[in-house]
Image 1 (cartoon, rainbow, N blue to C red):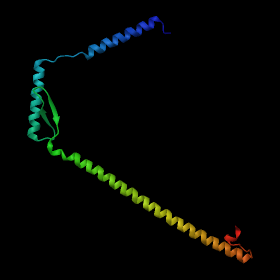
Image 2 (tube, one colour; image 1 turned 180 degrees about the vertical axis):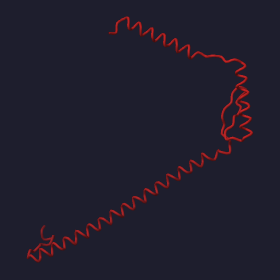
Image 3 (cartoon, rainbow, N blue to C red; image 1 turned 135 degrees about the horizontal axis):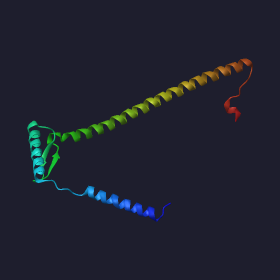
Image 4 (tube, rainbow, N blue to C red; image 1 turned 90 degrees about the horizontal axis):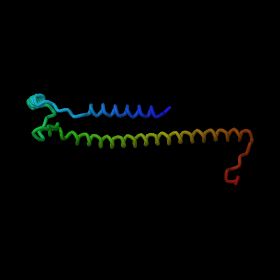
Length: 143
């Protein structure tokens, strides 16, 4: 199955693949006229953005490089988002506590109702037993 011929073909295939990949990844220099044209287009686009007052602007780092920069008028947005998140946390905690209190009140009301129903049923049963002539001993005397 994996004889010496197959290993040799695999290695040759890997070598061919690596060679093709190296050729594809090789650095290619662009012509001076193309780079000048691209820099001219970038400068024109930056002038248009500056004239239109768009939200993003290009700032020069050095002669050749440029980077996107956020304008200062939007600096407050980070603080506003943080404040909204903190407020959301406090509101969610308050809502959760309110739900817990409502659930506790509902459970307590259900318990009181169940105790009342049980007491009334027990009183009715005792009355029926008393009418039948059955004498119940008090709980303290059963000890």
